[in-house]
Amino acid sequence: MASDERALATWLAGRDDRELADILAARGISPTAPWKDFFDAADALLEPSSIDRALVHLTRGELIALAAAADDADPSAEAPASATRLALTGEDGAPWHPVTEALRRLRADRPDAFVAGAEETPPEPASEEETLASAERVFTTVGSLADVLAAALHTPLTRITSGDISAADRRKLVDAGALGDGAELDDIVGAAAAAGLLTSSGRDWEVAEAGSRWLETSTPERWRIVVTGFRASLPSGLRTPDGGYLPVTAWPARYPLDEDWDRRAASLARIAVQWGLLTPESREPAWATTLRDGDAPQTPELARHLPAEIDRVYLQADLTAIAPGPLAPRLELRLRRLAARESRAQASTYRFTAESLTAGLTEGETAASIREFLTGLSLTGLPQPLGYLIDSTAARHGLIRVRTDAATRRTMVESGDPALLDAVSVDQGLRALGLVADGDALTTGVSQDTVAWALSDARYPVISVGEDGAPARLRHRVRPNPERSEPAPEPHAALIRVLRGSHDADAENAWLEREIVQAVRTRAVIDVVVRMPDGTERTFTLEATGFGGGRLRGRDQSSDVERTLPLSHVVTVRSVA
Image (tube, rainbow, N blue to C red; front, side, top):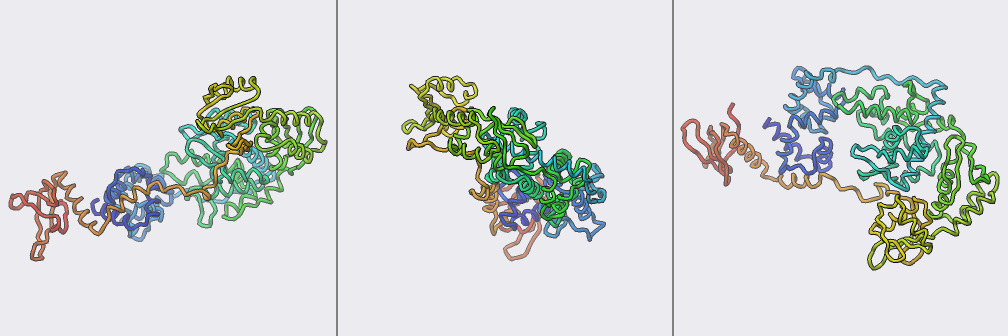
């Protein structure tokens, strides 16, 4: 064990910072680990519990290969590269002795994990009926994700401790018709996160810039972006060397030691079915085959099976709009900013209200731009009642003004309509803002943008005012793309600096000191090789009793006398069996 610890410490010290950070992350090491040097790191990484956690990340084939490399009966066996990336093997590729012991124990406890699985065969082609059903499923899932992103543009989706979406947000999306079943939400969010459309700070999900752009694209392009992102995010054990992925039916057996893998594999398989990469009968539509092989998906093949998108609606005098087919996404997105959708299908219904038009005006629309857009979209012209509603809502817009007071830096909510301001002050949905009366206005310590968004989401005729007194457009909450922002700091950077700072040319003495301290702690009997003043070496067998001031104290087992040996003269230390 001691020789393995020393060899691993030396090996770790020889990795560059990027490699070292990857190893620490892969092994699940806390950035606040109380390590002082590479010997501490090696000691911790060779702990049985740490090794067990690392072996969980190996696939069935990798476990079998590593076990073969640990078997003295097969000297030609090579450990998988993944074992080296997890610091489970030495420079020569041989597993460390504690790793070998862990493998022996696991082979006795879980022999099934070290048996090769069934041959991985490609799925059978889907029938025409199954293909049509998959295309319909894709169409529905794309629409659901668009609704989820549109909702998250206004209010980020809250995550609970388990990482799932909160029950309140789930219920809100179901009630809005975004989902048929709330259980689908986590898989839809998982696919969106894999494609970089949603990003999380840990407490919620927000729309990334890529997600905002995704909403403007066509349904086939939306699908292509998600499925290629999903493929890229799959665990390495599911990926093939040519950039594709293994048949979905092979996924459940890949990580036999991971107790959570069954749940995760089932989630990944559900996502594959949702997005048309596999049918519920485990057959494969033609558009997914090239994706599985590592190439681009056959988007035109999927598009051939999707309903044709339209660019016109029927505007009616009852303040509704009827789309007789799936509206082109960029048009549907803008229409949704002006009208509340009442039903979603290949033919959808939208209703204009003063509140929905107010929301559009808050986001930068004007009466003229709304009229121009709807006139160009309508097959039936602009009905008079709708025109009147647009004009009256625009005239009322801005009755509530939100600004930041220059002196106090508190947010002020003001209105020329005292009754409207009273309504805001007693609105139970706005209690979290902590609005209190301040003369003829309301004030709060919450930021101006947050207050303005809350009032807008509650459908009040609000405008946000800048320091110059001019209205400022409320923009969607979109998180910048990670590649455009400052790179996130490496979480293990501080720990790596500590390890590097302890490693210098005197590493040999550091190792000797470590061995001596351990021997003293257990009062072990050790052989100490000492270089004498004349250059010769002499071995003393001592019971280690103390160490301090750079000197080892111990009782000589041959002469029964107390000896004190300077560490600077010690060549090697080894325990006596």
